[in-house]
Image (tube, rainbow, N blue to C red):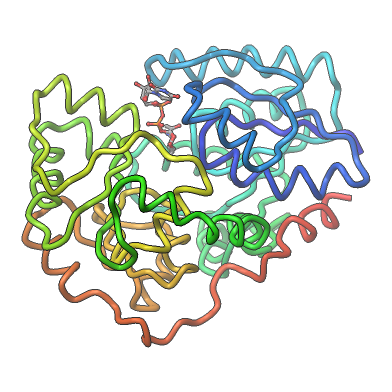
Length: 350
Ligand code: UD1
């Protein structure tokens, strides 16, 4: 088969790594990078570390308002699809690159395979929720990570083409986790000792756009009882500078990290505080308790298992959740598959 895969943002590079590898064993894959993430630390480092093949097309779209960014991607992906005439198009997750890829394909009557289908926050104010709902309704194959995701699709009337296959991030952890474990310098270069710090990330528009929300979250990090390593997404860096927020001394601001250093930092943390989707799952797989800086999550299984607590942006809730975090001996059921998701997806597509 000949397939086009569309990626553009950091978490999509991580998910594409195991699937590209499996696909290219027997099939032809054309990789399209929209350019949504373009800095070396947000993009190139993932291709280098994860051995992802260089994209056949780099669309160089970059940042803009949602409509302008998604529209520019739609036009540019359409041109690639017309030129390449693939049998199907693969899109990942919930970014503007996902929606643009799916819409361009569907309008050309090309079947769409959506990896990470069926996730819902039920919050339509998040751009990601709009992207995932629309992409699911445009897709021919819906690769769901869990039974919960399958049920959510059924509630929207989608049952055809739905396959529960697990999560490609587990495959990525299996493939690359050992290399990350052998990187003590990921901690020591920032003066961090294993188990003696917290790791935090903040990048969601819902947390960065409102000045008070961002101030409350960063204030809570500053009030924690251990040093906090905070690899800062460019969106958040810009907001902190614009708003002139002073980040407290026990918070160490780091540049965005590569995949291997980020895994090493997660593994060594006493607790992770994040608004990222992927990090909630990685924390779970690495058996590190997680406090989610949002009021809802798509990864509800990690909350039900007791390893993830929703704390929103309220400092008292955040501090209390960190204090009451799961201990190392808490029950830890298997979630999101066995690391063979890429193989399953390729078999189904073939
Ligand atoms: C996007 C996704 C989100 C995902 C996240 C992972 C959408 C709507 N959101 O949000 O689902 O969790 O990626 O990181 O698609 N920027 C840079 N350099 C870069 C990339 C971005 O400076 O390499 C800046 C941009 O100029 C922009 C801001 O960061 O001002 C946000 O970029 P955007 O493309 O909106 O996506 P994310 O916030 O990263």
